[in-house]
Amino acid sequence: MNLVIDSDILIFFLKGREDIVAKLSNCPQKAIFTTRINYAELLSGAYNSSKVEHNLSKITAFLDELSILEFDGQASQIFATEKPRLKRQGVLIAYLDLMIASIAKRHDFSLVTNNFKHFDSIEHLKIERWT
Image 1 (spheres, rainbow, N blue to C red):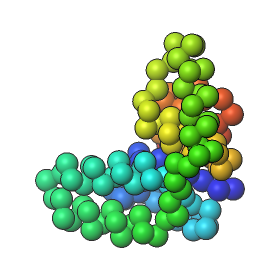
Image 2: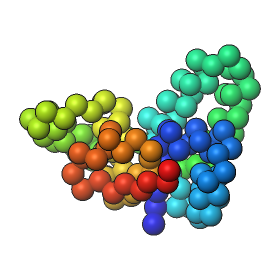
Image 3: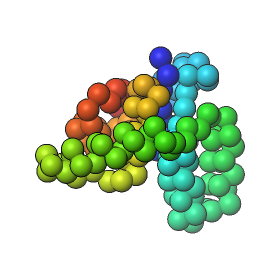
Image 4: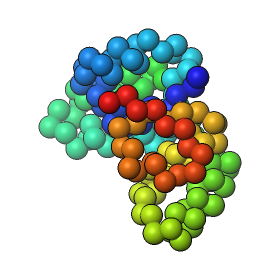
């Protein structure tokens, strides 16, 4: 099964959280993906830290080993239909989270995240909870 790893799980891995390191290390590398949005979120975190160069080096070395999924036309279509559906239901979700979910749905991959409440309202999104 292919997995899209959300930013929170990537951060747990980079910080050495043992349960996350073990789970991610046991997955075949060809089955592990993240999105360009998650990539940007991690870079932004590095630039916002007190150890910019150290964190950038650590993050980019790690992300260079992952396959990065882009927000393409099919993901855009999912986003465009899902956003108004959620709005009509009174569900607010951050655009970046919906973009990440749209990418995962577009590829029919499971999203691995700790932010269940951000993603639970998205129809037909496969979610794995590792924490």
